Amino acid sequence: MANVKFDDITFRYGSHTVLEHFSLEVESGKIVCLVGPSGCGKTTLVRALLGLIKPETGSITVGDRVLFDAKKRVNVPAEKRNIGIVFQDYAVWPHMTVLENVSYPLKKQRRPKEEIRQRAMRALEQVHMTEYANLLPNQLSGGQQQRVAIARALVVDSDVLVMDEPITNLDAKLREEMLLEIRMIQKRLNATILYITHDQQSALQLCDKMAIMEQDGVLCQYGTDEEIILHPANRFTFEFIGISNFIPVEKDGKGMALNCGEKIPYEGSVPEEARSGGYELGVRPNDIVFDDASPLKAKVDSRVFLGSEYNYFLSVGKKQIRVQQSMLDARTKGVANEGETVGIRFLNTRFYPAKKGAETA
Image (cartoon, rainbow, N blue to C red):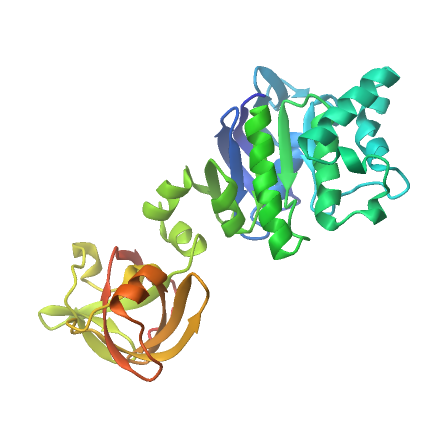
């Protein structure tokens, strides 16, 4: 397997710029998840890699092969790029058996029959589907059909494997199983996988690294899941990955206050740039703890048990915030009851400029 490098990629649909001077390098033997909201350019980037569209500027290399270079006028045809692809909708042919589906790319290459069968069976073995080789797709579950699609991508010795929303159509349990399967396949093959998704939870479970794209196609952060969760580069990353609460802060006499429809004194530390106003305090639900000694009070509007944690909605003044309490914390400190007034304390707070038009109540 090989690394993938996008350098200075620009692509437009008419007057609409999707990607502009976009650069990213995916390390060899890693699963890198490209994450961002719908319309941010994830699929456009994949199409450029596959050779289905032609960027205006930049270059794309896989290992030491230049697949595209605008300046040097290099544009390798899609069928010669040696990249495996797994789509969201399985894309298995209903009239072909599992073995015939997996064998198809090798038949197109006019490989010897015995080689085709051996390689196809080996690919099916990698996804634990050898016993289904002679079945038709309509005899398989959705998860099994997606494994066939993965085997078909693996049967050709691809430099890179691209997965574009491959588990979106599966139910929750199958999604979980497929994420484990993809990780196990990657470990066995030491494969380079570019995984495209808008599902941040899947990305966090699967990836070695994440590339976070903003709505305008800008790459705002690239790093491990720990780096992105614990050290978000900006407000977009903090807000997009995980759940977040935002509360406006403003100066109140000599101190600071939370603007929750009413001014509530805030005794926590506030950076100097946020003291002049126009900023919001950001805190994740699992970084809010119950503390009877805290002067910051909230009313418990609702409490839901989710199996591994409790999920609360609290009212601080006229503003509602979300709190998540781990089972360990609940067992050692107890739970808060609906209608109860509790003290809360914020941990790991961040401060970002308020969004234009953001409500303060």
